[in-house]
Image 1 (cartoon, rainbow, N blue to C red):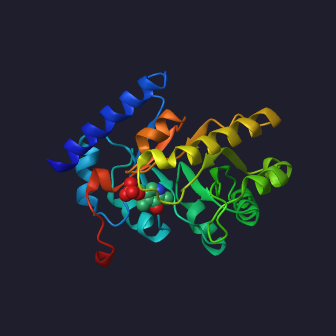
Image 2 (cartoon, rainbow, N blue to C red):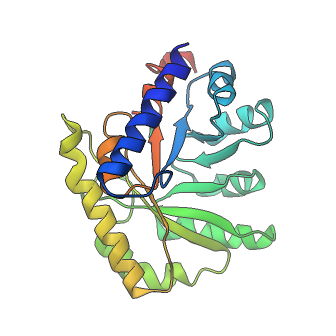
Length: 231
Ligand SMILES: *Cc1c(COP(=O)(O)O)cnc(C)c1O
């Protein structure tokens, strides 16, 4: 079966990259990015032991969540509009990964407070510094750090990035190294442990693991080519 074979290969590559980097086996979580793929495909991955799924769009996640077994864990990895924060927080995402602005983090904290929850989030960093891209620039994150870490109803678990596509996996290494180094700087500043670094996709997850990723977000390498026309 295609999906099972792909998963086996990816798990092996992750293990090899962990070993190469001198990291303990099992330090990296494989997030299966299932956007655009049907629940039937996701169930193949589930049957093969996969429990962690990532969806890009809230609406699509909300449709799939009740259709999958209850022991799945979900990450929201796409941009979240502020007017959809309540809807998102009413679902049980283990992690909201792409929190790309202070305003969004503040809205999440406020609404999580209203719902009596603490939301686990990652802050998205615009590591390339391209104007058009989502996320905090490293400088902004430094400037906003005191405000962000004081938000009462969010738990900032770490950082994530979606670097500009590169021709080779190696091409992404500097961006991954930059995210890791930023996390180290912020850890040193306190007060957060920032255990998670979400970086690396189908093309370059092995390099990301070598650079310290704790979550790799892999879609097409598991499920095949995405057909956006189908959704
Ligand atoms: C779609 C997506 C991925 C997975 O991309 P692949 O190249 O298919 O592995 C990872 N992260 C985010 C934020 C995505 O939107």
